Length: 388
Ligand SMILES: *Cc1c(COP(=O)(O)O)cnc(C)c1O
Image (cartoon, rainbow, N blue to C red; front, side, top):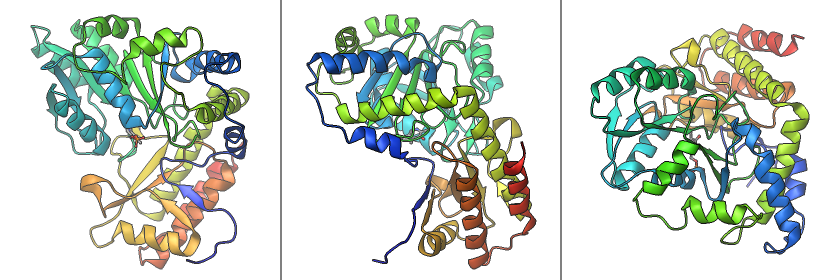
């Protein structure tokens, strides 16, 4: 065990760096979750969380990982044997599909090459072919954290509307929430799945479901077994600021602080900051002479960038050298991308110099592992970070 001076650089795309303000907030004494002080906190939070999802409807907060919130979205809206349409955009879409199958849903999985998002034209085709309106829901991962590709949800919505199809739209916005412009209501999303440890700058442990009117009525008919995840008892208790079980009080303190920070910066500024940092990162990667995994510039992720290395280089070796030498964690290649890509997380609590340091670390790590890099890449990134 070596001793490290200075701060560890946690540049994986979640969990992200937790701001000191948030950490300090979570360190306050836990209070009675059946008392008035808790109810005040919960009512305030349940109200303040809405703009992050772009909704005026209810948001259920679970003590869970994102995976739990995935399950909640499915079991509350669907019935055994229901047909759902999903898309192989990457590792997380594949995991969500597997969960749907294990729950007894019939998944139509549209294959993909892990470099592109959901194709709205394919959505239109599949729905047009479903004349009997048999497909009950469409599952979309908004920002595919394994690939750094962001699907175009408004265009997917438009495709569903043009087909006049009644399927529910379920969206995993786990790694886009509070980093990328997202509009649950405006885009007609029925359930948006979120969690705490990505753009929301919190430790892991909170899962979210934002729920449309249509999803609420679907929930009345949905027959998949559920108990802990059932929306109804939570929504009922939430009306008075309570939970049907012990809530994660200290994480909720942290959530309140994180939401205050987002309000202070202003969501449009938060999104612009993420867009700029993503642009700077891509400028570095392309300038170095390397390839961004995302193959369509309309789908570049503002939360993370996956860097594709040639067959002759081992991306995990690069990550290991960077960790050993510069105390920085980068995201590994997941699933079929193992060893081929590394991922630079640039979401959450991050400023120009954090990103400059991150990119400098990647630059040096690539050099140390014998990956040829053009030094003008870093300068191109700094130019974007320096602008206005
Ligand atoms: C992180 C992530 C998940 C999984 O969340 P867990 O908290 O690890 O369960 C799911 N989907 C996406 C897009 C993610 O980035």
